[in-house]
Length: 280
Image 1 (cartoon, rainbow, N blue to C red):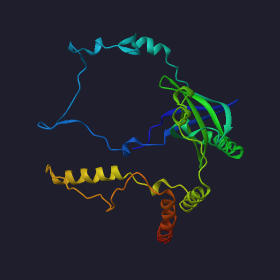
Image 2 (spheres, helix red, strand yellow; image 1 turned 45 degrees about the horizontal axis):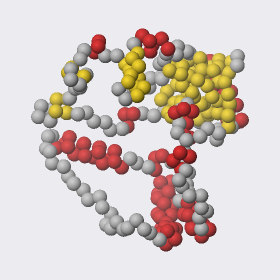
Image 3 (tube, helix red, strand yellow; image 1 turned 180 degrees about the vertical axis):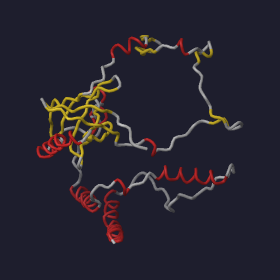
Image 4 (cartoon, helix red, strand yellow; image 1 turned 90 degrees about the horizontal axis):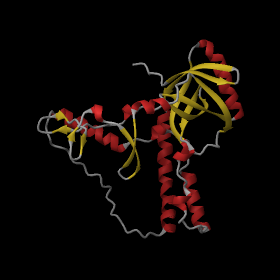
């Protein structure tokens, strides 16, 4: 099934307009989701809209409310909410350019791929992509879609471009509110050197394919076993302990770091051997 475009329109830079299509770069189908089932009948559970002390209510009697304080709401009609929605526009204007490293990762929300809409748009698309790449800049703009206005950042991504929706400033909490109680003491030089050595040993180019969601894999295995059992409720239990006993909270940091650095030498050999097998 062909992917459906999240947005179609044109990117505008001054007097230049580039027709593009935007597609989601992530997929929710990869995650496992569950439905609540009534076990005796095997039927899916549905939910009724109810009011405490009254019972089930008609959908026509439901209105949206914003809670100002506990049990104190401002009521809004659907027509009032619709009236303040931003008109969806077919133009994304690039209004500012910033260094690629300037945007704090806290602000990034969701990624999308940007591609030229047709062959006629390709030349201008490539010019913008390469100009951003040469300047090492990210373009900023606001995208109006589905009644909302999203702050977005656009940068080169291979032969295409990557658009990422950003959180607005009032949606991000300041870290200092959480970090304020952490001591500002400098660590011992030897401890810092050991930690730095361990980081250096374990440094490698990022490859998301090297990591797996073990919980999701275990769930899929469990679902497959149950499905093949055709109604058999038995579940195979596995021992996931690694044979190590849990110790106390107090550890010798110096000894632990030294052991980690020494023990990682064997891991490095295994990693190199694995890479050789993959390349072969």
